[in-house]
Length: 116
Length: 113
Image 1 (cartoon, one colour):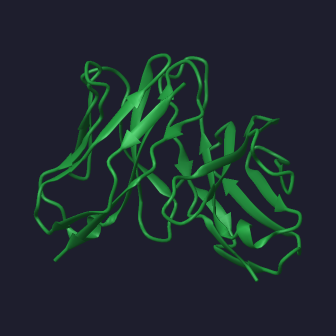
Image 2 (tube, each protein chain N blue to C red):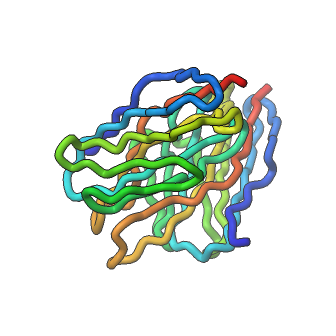
Image 3 (cartoon, rainbow over the protein chains, first blue to last red):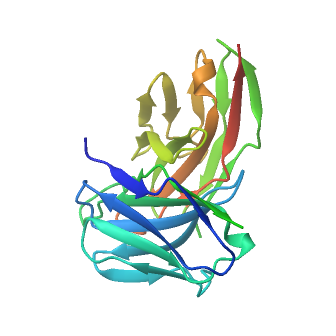
């Protein structure tokens, strides 16, 4: 089945120690997103790639970076995690074309990040 | 701008009860409307969608009708099960426009046996 895969599902890192979360997709979608979700809240968009074009949300801290080496893979790098960065990180994809009438998203299962 | 307003939760029901979760929206442009569901510890899954006025989306016994006149997309199910316990998010994107969805805050549903 076509899907969005996130690894690892659970990640523990130390305060200030860089961490990388990964996402891969077999849907061949052109847009990939990274969201941060804290308990009992809606997902908050950090950034997204439209093909190779990177789009950063204005309020995303510089501590968060992303890479998309090819269509299938996307990485989230947190350069110096703080306690406030503990959250669920969700990767999502969508197919965006000029003639589309709706842009539903397909989400991975998420990576739960703990910062100690 | 675009916004989605959902009723606050948690919504607590007994098994086999009727469910309604209200969702209203404001949009610049013609929106497509979605309901996503998030089970504990998992990512969001698309539950249903509607792309034009008066369309009814349905899936797994859930339904929602796109009401342009009241700018609403309320989620309903005739008989809930314990396995329906989850958080439900209403969302919109703009057809032919902004593909970045706007999410509501989510409504937690708890179903007791």
